[in-house]
Image (cartoon, rainbow, N blue to C red; front, side, top):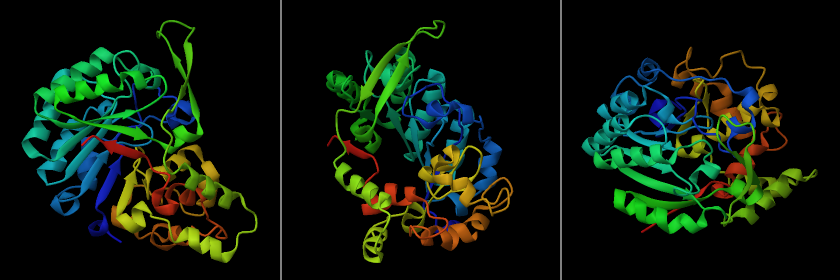
Length: 347
């Protein structure tokens, strides 16, 4: 594979964030967090011209950070759209100034190549319960500024028990802004409750709320079957084959790559999350490769794509008998990505 085979690039342009969402890896593993951010020059080095940009989708999201925390994010968006790249943002929206968001909205309105997903899980009374530390007044101001500039956006709302009563208020607000509206269900919310600690920054005591997803993922039973398969000691060749052939890999099947805030390249956000946490001993399993083997500070995208692990071993390691097997590949992407978020956009 080379850059010509890549159609979508997820960019974690920073690991910094103003929020402390209880389900986020950075909140759960703050001791492992290293703050890192792309500069505009880093992006231009990796994606210098239309060959690397035109007709490709760039998603500003990530595992650890919010793109709005990167001061160069608007300039990066401008660079990519100038060469015909499509940019999708995923943000809590409660950082930067109104002018900053208006400029991004202008790029969206002018080019028709920018869409922002405002991840706002509630309205004035409840959004901060999961999106801990976000400021509603700042968020509301920024969404309005982006809307005033004609920016294209979708308000994406995770429905929890605590915020369901504000769902219609948020939907009406989105309509007034000219945004699409969607509800999101995550598989993790079908497995876990989140403990949200909220309160004023200068107070030691914080209010603790258990945050439960009220809308269960429709494919949770399929993922539970995958859990049982992974836990089974004596897996037959037939059942293994049946599972592996249902894997829909972002890299192998969809031509997608993930670039972390450390400028390391991974096949997807899931395996970068595993690397951040060293889940399933992923760092030990890949330790035979020299330091920086997947770093884009010293390697080109094509060089990393042609590394043996990306080129062949990743696909081979989906088999549980392989020495570099990572169960997460089956957990998150078997049964045709049953684990992935469900987003339902209002028609």
